[in-house]
Length: 238
Image 1 (cartoon, one colour):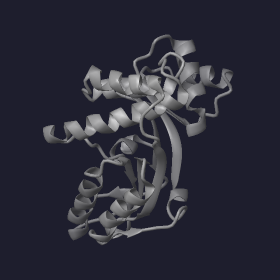
Image 2 (cartoon, rainbow, N blue to C red):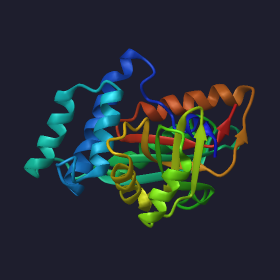
Image 3 (tube, rainbow, N blue to C red):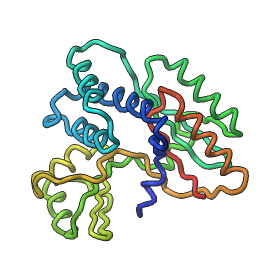
Image 4 (cartoon, one colour):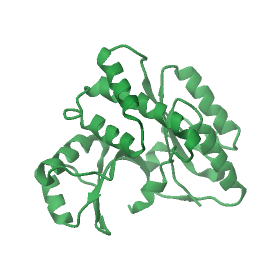
């Protein structure tokens, strides 16, 4: 699969001015994950990974604590996951992952981003079949055979394991995330995961060039400015 997956998920923290928006997005996601899976990171591996990722992105502790306290109280907004898909500038395939408390507002805002950048929003399933929904766990190491053995003993359905420059990356179906992470922790002890995410990985790539590149950057910027947008995945290559 290669490390191209790291470039296919759009980073939101590009400038200092974007930090507040990043904090808000993390706060919303932490709240939802804690509310659905429990507020204890030791018992909710998805929450644990999300908190670790937030800290690496320099999200302040008070933002994390506030989101967890909000989930503990059981009050607050009722967010739902919404996924929109379509074709970006140059015909590249795009998935837009949102958390929303108002689907009508969110679809309207997302559609505007598509319409203003020569992109085309699609129907459910129009491009998602060209992405794999994968759990990705990356950490420092060089014994991929031992990692594979640990995962197989735990009956984890492993898609692929890469060993590159002293870094091991495990790919598994998204449904195997918790089991795969626990198996690695049980076998290898307290690992510091450099990558601990569930992503949509494109099965191929769509080259874009010329004016389409500039329009695509505008498209991404407009989407990232929307509060409801959590992640953007694409297969554009330029």
